[in-house]
Length: 228
Image (cartoon, rainbow, N blue to C red):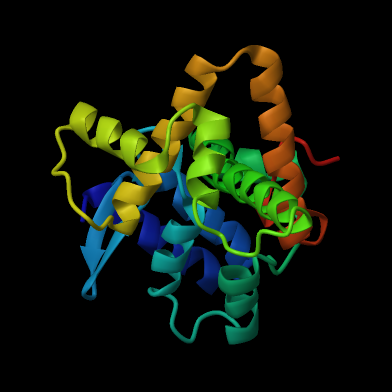
C-alpha cells in the first residue's frame, strides 16, 4: 500500500471520528487514493481499468473494510448492494468530493463499461424477442448475433483480437478484471468503427436499459451526466 493510500484511510477514519458524515469522508478518501488495484485479505481489487476507467464503488467496498463498527451496517449494505447512499448529493457535490480527474475516470467506467454491458443486454433481448415472435424458442446464436449487430463481428473473434493486441493468452475462460478490460475495449472499438449517429443511438439504448433495470433516479450514487 502506498503512503498516499495509508493517508486516505487515516483521513477517512479521522473524518468519521470528528463527526463528519461517513459517506462524505469516504468520497474524500476515494479522491486521495492512488493505487490502481491491490490484493487485500485474499482478494484482488481492481479500481482502474485500462488506466482510464475508475470503478469507485469497488474502492468504496475496499475502504468500508477499514470501517468495521464505525458506520451503520444498514447504510453500508444499502450503498454497496443497492447503490443507495446514506445522503443524496447533487452531481456537482459528488464531482467536487471525488475530484475532477477521478470523476472523469468514473464517467469513463460508467459509459465505457456499465452502459456498454447494458447496450449488449438490450440488443440481445431485442433479438431474443424477435426470434420468439417468429416461433424460435431457443437462444442459440443470440449473443453472437448481438455482437455482430453492434460491433460487426462475433464475440470470440473480438475477444481473440483484443487478446492479441494486449498480448494476453488465448484462454477458454475470462477473469472479471479481463472482462472489464474487454468491455472497455469494445466501447472504444465501437466508437472507432461506427458513425456518430449510431454511437449516440447505441449509447442511448444502453442508458435506457440501465435505467430500466437499476432505476437510476432512485439510485443517485451513479451520478450519470444524463440525470437531471
